[in-house]
Structure formats: structure tokens, C-alpha cells
Length: 620
Image 1 (tube, helix red, strand yellow):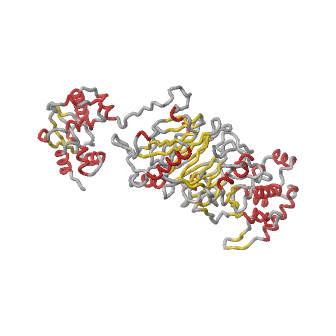
Image 2 (image 1 turned 90 degrees about the horizontal axis):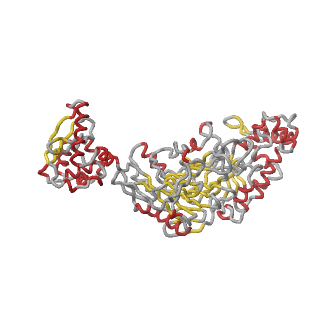
Image 3 (image 1 turned 90 degrees about the vertical axis):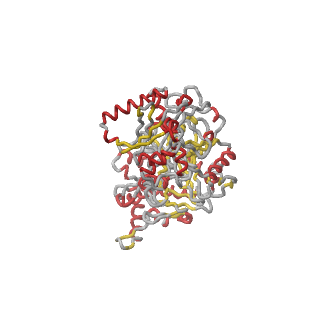
């Protein structure tokens, strides 16, 4: 429907109030206000014959609406009103014969005259209503009624700590998601989360996200089912439920790192994201977003910003498990097209649960055999409730399975370190290669395969082959000559010049350990390898067009990915970045560190789940 200034003015004149008019037109009150402003139409009530102004237009031609003073104005309790618009609507709500409509041009007034007139008008209106200008402005600014939670702990929790909710005592599991105002939700997913909570004795916390909120905004579920408060879930874990972050913001973590103060924080946002923060000591901190139960259709405006936000919108949630002491585990629950989701125990829908039988793959934190942490090995393969035994993966994906510490180029300028390695017998390259074969044999589960991702530490082996001086590095001279001979034997001409074999694979093909190749596949830098439409062949050290790799850069590629390399777990839009399986303190990292031990599960519905390993445990 198209409106002219004259037709809209006539409709406003004939309507008893704006809400009724908006309802009759089939548009929201906000849309009507914007339409009115577009045409420069404003309400200016006159009390006692004096104009009292409340101006929204920008010095455009406006409509002067003259009202008689309501005879029963004293019956209105204006201190409970939401804003000036409501005050004006009450004045409008009189028999139609009591108002007159005329036009005048604000551009005829000087800015000084307008300012003085506005001040006089406000004073006159406030005098008639029996409130101060300050109180009237407060009414105008009030958007959402303040909510008070009587269950918050009144005791002082300490600096940088939030209060706790006494109703949460006794719970060791929480499911946390968000809901956006004025938008429909995925009811089946919401019910599936409630089903999960009932089966796992967890508490569901739905926190609010606001988008163009106004005093008429509502949520698709009752406010009593929404949690509005910032709280401390456990000593090192905060939920910032009352932190208003726009759902259209590209980076929901921008500028909030300092809120952590060493704690893991969870913030409401429909984009699923996670970032690990650098800390000192063993305690690690992360920032997580909640995902959402809100349907993305019609949740955003049809703008560039809105369309991007819709694209990154994720129907998902977090599961928080409190463990011994102050430790805890956080992992994501991703809704699929059937409004169900997988967790480590199985598949949940709104009215059913199916126990897990197998998963497609586990993408391991960078393996680094030689400095691999035995606690990670136990949690992944050996414990009675290990990931391998409970999840039954079809494949394990290894990045940096070779550490290459025996002859790393990082040590080339450190004579003392190289001499110490030689003295302690730690500089033998073939011993490291044999160690990888031994590890793959001992961790092999019949029916599974190991996918070896081309990665920078494996590349160190080839770099050593091309830079080593066998006259100096006599301890590795035999392997040096053997490998260079095999490489030259396997060289082939191709359209770009020379094609060389994979040096790492080539060693095992010509060694007593060739049996491991029966259950190993090697990816290349130029050919992709996908599992459930997820690209797993990129280690993360290299980006597009030869650039340096990063989760942020790789997230912009045209596919879902899982990478490693940085030893820092992260979820950046379509890119999941695992951590490490090694010890957290190695020779080349010092100072505050964001390294964590973390794997990523690929489920049969193509959804991914990040698993942090804390103190040797991958779940509570």
C-alpha cells in the first residue's frame, strides 16, 4: 500500500490512536512511526490554547494536530507510562469532533526560535501532566521493564565475579542457548533440548538476544522460561546472559576479551563461535557464543549486514558439564535439518533418543608423536571410557603426526640445543619416523583408518633432506643418502616441471613398517579430502594463494573445514580449528599461551562438535 502525505494525514486524523491505526493497516506500530516521519507528520497537542511540541521530524513540513484538553486527564497515571508517545496517544484518545488538523512549515522558524519554543512546549506539557521534564525524558528512554531475579545470591562473590543463582545448586549439567525477540523459534529443536535435559538431568537456560527491540517486543516463549542475568556457573565459568550483542555483528567477541579475567565466558549470540584466550599456568579460558533456537527466516532485514547475519545464524546450543573441583567441559550441540542433534551419547529429537553406534571421524589435535601427552592418548584410546571406545570412529585424522624435533630447522641457530640433543641421543631422524610407525600400530583399531594430513612439521622432514650436510650430520648420513636416492628414483616430469613423491610416505614404503600403510591415507596440498562434505585436508598453516593460514582466513573459503596447526581451538563461522595432543609447554612456546588439547568429532549427519580435553578428561 502506498501513502501520500495527504492520505496518511487523513488516516491519522480519523484514527483514535496509533496502535489501532497500525493494526488496521496490517503493519507494526514502529513501521507506522517511520512512515509518519518519512512524510514529516508529527503530533503536536495543544493544551489551554498553547502549542506543546514533541518533534520527531527533521525540519520538514509537518502536520499540526490540535487537541482539546481531556476532561478526565487526572485519571491517567502517567508515571506508569512507557514513553512520550503513550502520553500523546492518551491525549489523542478523545471523540473525533474534539480535534482540528492544520499544516504549517517548520522551516519558517529560526533554530533559536525553535529551541525556545520546544523548551516552552515541554514545560507546559509537564506542568499539565504534573511531572518534571527529567521524569518525562526518563519515560521516553525506558524501553524494557527492569527484571529482578530474587534467586541471585546476595553475597559478594569477589572482584570480576558474577553472582550465582541459588536455584542452580544441585545441577552439574546446563544446556545454554539463545532466543531472539519478535521472531519464531524452531519448536522441535527447543523440545529436543528439553528432552535432552530431562534424560541427562540438565538445566536448560535460554538467554535473550535483542534485535530492534522496543517496548512492544516479545519472545516466542514465556519470559519465565528465559534467563536474563549474568551469573557465575562455577568458579571459572561466567554466563553473560544480560550482555546485549547485536545478532548482526560479524565478530561477537570484538572488544570483550577483558571480561574474562581468566574465566571462560559464554555470551548470547545466534552465530556459533569459540575463541581460546592466552593465559598463564594450567587453567585455560575460552569465549563461547550460545547459538540460537530462533528460526533465521524473517529474523533479519534484507540488507547486506542482515543477509550475512542470516547466513552465519546457527540453530545450536552449548552443553556445560561441571566436573571435579572447579573444572568443567563445554561442547556445542548442532541442530540438523530434522531439528535433532548429536551429542556424545547419541541422537536426540523432541520425542526420542537413539544411542550412538559410531561417528564418521575424529579430527585429532595435532599429534606430535615424541612429545604427545600420555593423558591425551589415554583419553582418546586407552581409558575404558575413551573416545575411541565410546564413539567408535571410522577414521582418525592426524595433523603434524611427525614432530621433527630431532632435526628441526628451528634449532639451526642454537648450537647448545643441537649439541645437547646429540649428547642425549635425541637427534636421530629415523628414530622419530620409527616412533610414528610404532604409535600408529599401537593405536590402531581394526576397521578404522588413519588419515595423515600434509602439514608443516611433516614438511620439516623434506626440508631436512634438502638442507642437511651429511658430512657434518654423520648420525643421519645413511638415512639422508637413502631418502635422496629414493626421491630421485621416484621423480617424474609433469606439466609444471617435476613431480616428487611424498617423502614421508616414501620412507614407510621402503621400510620394515610398510604394514601401517594398509590402514593409512595421505592427503596432499593440492587435492582435497572430504568427509561428510567437510574439507579435512588443510592443516591450517597455508591459506589461499600461498598466504599464511589462519582460521579467520580459511573460514572465508567456499566449504566447511576442520584445521589444526595453531594448537589453539577455535570456531570461526564455517571453520573448526582443533588444538594439540602434545604437552602444552614445548621448546618453542613461552609466556602466556592459548594452547589447549582438543579434538573435533564428525557425526553421521555432517555436524561437528569440539571436544576439549581438560586434566586428561574429555567429558565429566
